[in-house]
Amino acid sequence: MAWVSQQFTLSTAYPMLVASMGASAVILFIIPSSPLAQPWPLIGGQLVSAVIGVACAQLVSDKAFASAYAVGGSVLAMLLLRCLHPPGAASALTPIMASDPLAGTLGYSFVVMPVGLNVAVMLIMAIVINRWLLGYNYPLFLQQSGTKNMSQETAIIPFQRTDISCHDMEQALDNMDRFIDVTPGDLSKLLTDVQTRRFKRHTGNITCGDIMIKNILAVEYGTEVEEAWKIMHREKLKALPVIDKSRRIIGIVTWHDFFKFITVNSNETFPEKFRAFIRRTPNISTDKPESVGHIMAMPVTMLSENSHIADLIPLLSDKSYRQIPIVNNQNRLVGMVYQANLIAALANSQVLNRGHVEEPPN
Image (cartoon, rainbow, N blue to C red; front, side, top):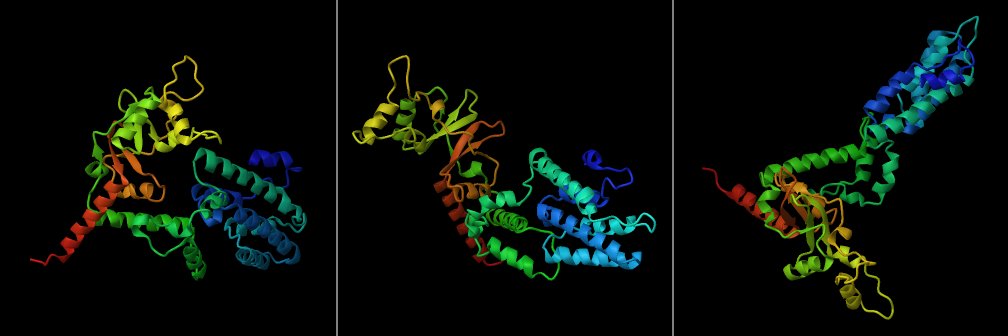
């Protein structure tokens, strides 16, 4: 940022950097999920405060009063414009502290250079570093379009649903008589974690390995499509894991993976097309998938046999998986958990808990 600003600085006597950018860097890179670190608070907070600071430096001759007016005015403006960014108040002080009776005060060009340029470079750096180097969702509004399509009422995990929505959380934060540096998403994650811990405490240490179906059938990458379908049809399976020689999962095949390759014309029927699809091609060349590896879905969502059954609930409910492969510590396939297994485990845990509560004390 200093190097970029240096390229645009016309005079060595003119400020190249605003000191408040150091404080902005702490907020943007240490707490990027904070409302204070979002683009509008950064841009609006810095620029609005800089304008107020220049105005106070030019209109108020006494530095003490000018400083008070600048800080107070910038804080009020940031609150009204919903762009609160604490380092902005420091930017408002810069034109006042830099003013000199002989040299005069900084003009409104200070808002563009260096403040505007510093803010632009800082924002670009924050997006690049947070999103692509640190893996944070920054800025937050880039993920809101995806979240808005989801039902706001399902923000909480399904085994402990409440009537609390993201809108309720936003209103609660707005009604607070003080500023709280937390987003509705952070509150939702916190509430979900609390409910998950409560669920684990009440159900006991029931793991995926306790409820999984063992000795399940699996196929390999080179297994023919027809053979895989015969296994699924004979055993009435909805899914078939695809494993390598070490029994590590490399994919999974469901009915959908067979059907998605079928296109029926007006003079054809689905059964005819399906039989032609799964039937092995006798020729050397083929224009359709012949092995399971060509139609399998990947990557595969799986859990460890030591995972608590609470980890299954969002996968089998909100994400609509019908089954979850279970692996051991070496990531080798050891079983499968279906929705029915989880429902039975939850029902049994409720019965046991109820019986434990109703038992009279000794």
